[in-house]
Amino acid sequence: LEALQSLELRENLLKSLPESLSQLLKLERLDLGDNEIEEL
Image (cartoon, rainbow, N blue to C red):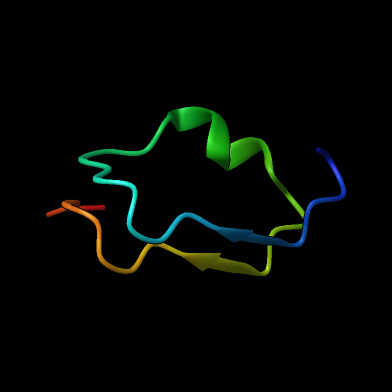
């Protein structure tokens, strides 16, 4: 997962994100559309 550049998490009813996402150092695109996240 260290080389992951794009992650799509649309429409998953997410309310928060795990802190482990900060370890994805090569991540360039993160799609969180249509979730229930209110604050980053």
